[in-house]
Length: 202
Picture 1: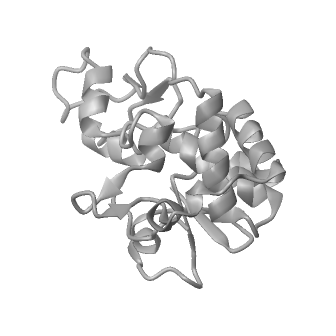
Picture 2: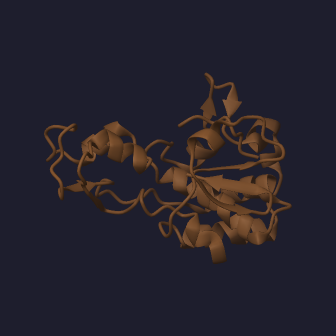
């Protein structure tokens, strides 16, 4: 289970895969700054500034100006070994969840990979730590459950999530309301959908 106190750091699944984070541009509205746009699109301000060298003053953007939300570089590829690691995490996190929930968990991993606020490799995302390396972002890494082999549904779910990469609206976090011990996501993130026992948020 993804720990709810993590800090920033098929069917209904189209709601889970981020579009805002990967749209090529955003059209500035009155009152926008690079900081406010970065926050609303889950992009670090440093990254957004680097994507937009044409904007000389981050605090002053003209209404109607196009703001790049990503670099022109290609998204990090996902290898066979990456997918195997993802499937093991999906199996550990969502073994008892509906198939759609398994795809959704795999989607969160991919969303993080493609989001500037998280590591840029699958292994980096899955093994990311907080509190000076004491806490892993995903509980199965902490307790060793990730070492178990993935079942066929988890492998298939990862393949589906990878195939549909970059579509929809998406999630960066998930948690189980019944077992979570922290309110951080509920208080700071927008819920996108609930599948089985997992609530997903961005």
